[in-house]
Each structure stands twice: as C-alpha cells, then as structure tokens.
Image (cartoon, rainbow, N blue to C red; front, top):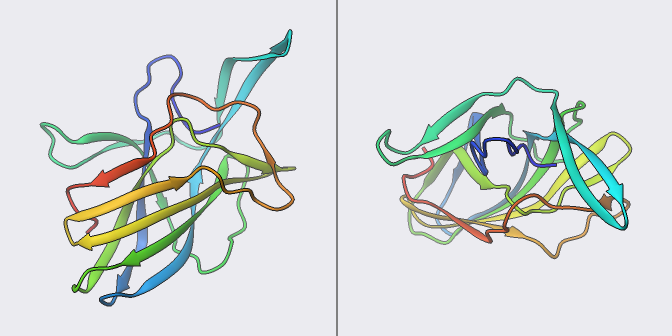
Length: 178
C-alpha cells in the first residue's frame, strides 16, 4: 500500500530527492524509473470486504516540506537514484515509472519530484512492487504537472485489492523541481 499514515494521515505525497539530477533540453522527453517506499498493509477480509487494520513500514520514515515552510506540502521523504530501466528493489520499496515531457522552451534540471499516492493502485508480483505510471509535464520551470495514469496495468503483476484514500489525478509542483 502507499506509505500513508493511516492513524494520522501525515501525508498523501512522496517527495523523491534525486541523487543525481535529470537535465532536459527544450521539447525533450525521457522515461526514467525511481525507487519509492511502500508500506505493507495488514488486511482483514470478511464478507467480501477488505479492511486495513494496520501497516508495517520497512524503510525509515522521514518527512519533508516541499515549498515554503508557511504553506508547503508535507511529504514522505525518500532519496533515490535515477534509473533508465527498472531497478532491483528491496522489501519496502516499489518501482515508480515516470514519463517526463519538457514542452517548455527552457532547459530544465529536475533534482526532486513529488508524487501523489493517495488512492492510487499498487501492483505486486511476489516480493516486487510497482506504483505504475506517472506522467510529468513541464510547461515552465515553475509549472510542472504530475499525473498518475490510473488505467495502466503492469504485465504479470496483480493490482492490490484496495486503495487508500481519495484518488487525486493531478499534482502541481508550483515551487519548481530544482
């Protein structure tokens, strides 16, 4: 399940800090992969209803604010490498596939990305987990839109039977990505 703190709902986003930034030329597209944290949900299945009764976190939980301290977004914080093919993951991590489209006339350097995880599908196959596909559309250095593609299926993977929270299709990175 996405790393949403069920008892307190601290955050419904993940702030991925990139170990090395991604530089895109004007009008350039790129497909990259990241690792991101997931939690293991303890679920009670009764009378055709799944109920989350607890969660287990296998990675160290850290939080950060994306944007100004006064009105920024509280996010689960995770440091990740940029991969050009699906990376190997450990228990407690999931693969995030991101298609980036720099439609702007600017050279863009991405050193972070904030993804919405409330209400999204998680896919699994044995111990491998996958968040699915996010599309990043860069219109200007300060106008970056993140969209989760809910209808994507990952071949050979199963979709988790439940999602957590209300799905939010778009997230605007209004404070930039550098």
